[in-house]
Length: 255
Image 1 (cartoon, helix red, strand yellow):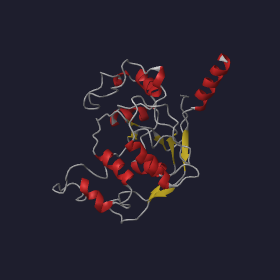
Image 2 (cartoon, one colour):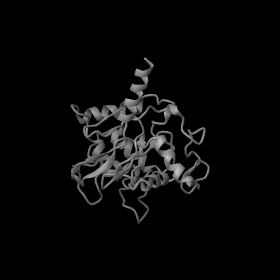
Image 3 (spheres, helix red, strand yellow):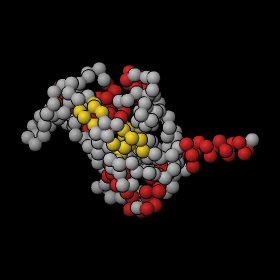
Image 4 (cartoon, helix red, strand yellow):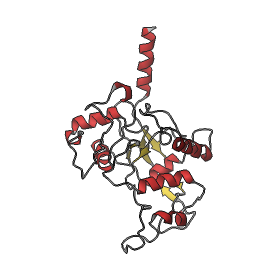
């Protein structure tokens, strides 16, 4: 029995290999239209590669070992607020949640991690394009149901291991577990009223979303866009993590 148990753990560990998924070229009708486009216009997304899973605590610990300037307590407040790695009681993740998504990370630290891997953060259009793909046999309403269900449920104190939700391209956990940083996280809206600023687009304010939305009924997407727009690069949050993208396939270590 014990041998079977060890074998089962080994199989499950091997199956969580940190691969990148090839994302084919496609198009996306963004929730908020681009400044130079019309309502209903689609955005072309070139083919690229995206991490199969969000970055885990185990992977982020390896990054810190190689880049000690990103250790908890050493990072300048210019690059991460006081909540950075706030759920790490020690300097290493526990066995219980080493395969859980790393959270309490800033945009700067996420960007540094991806650069260290030879990758980059996905753009908002890239992330949204992949996230719009429903699981096999499901439609987009099923995706919205997963998102809205996650908004309404009580969040766990400890995040589960990655691999909970899989879309039709084989990308896991874009919905139902955490928020994720993207490279251009604050380019579509802002939380304040910028109509008095001459250097910003006049519709780039919180209420302006109602003027730019392609689908007024897509409440789940507006929550996501609105949350991103309210962030600053140094912010960290309990359910905010990230994954990386690349224009070429990069082989990672196993989780």
